[in-house]
Length: 125
Image (cartoon, rainbow, N blue to C red; front, side, top):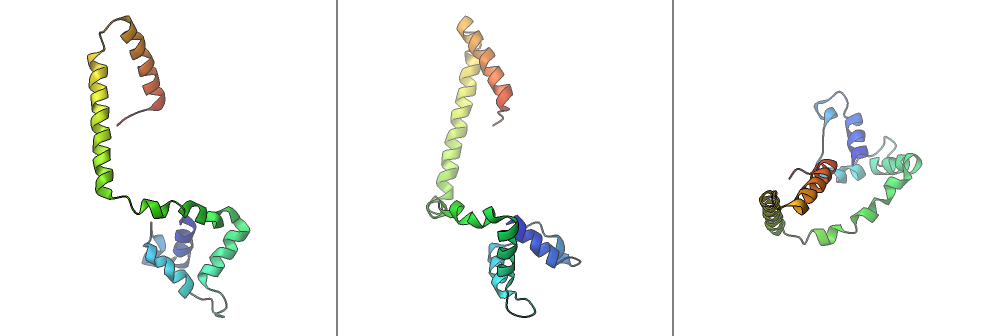
């Protein structure tokens, strides 16, 4: 996608569209509509040719798309509900940690280790 955006910005250089930070997915359809002056090659063909020679691994993008079909079945609302449940669970864990701060020597060791891990992981919910 970055390469396509770069290509579009290069082609539109000097215009208002020449410094885009993104594009709509339906704009990808234009890659097959835009032809060279001799009408033998589309912009899609050119892009594929360049990628094949410079970055052939990018042409294997279809491997990354395998999980998209199942991802489309996930409801955004259910994700939001799950995220809220996770955040509530984390808040409970924080409360328990705070409440157990003075529970004796085992608690002291646990809190030292936990603080070390937290600083390593840079965990900030």
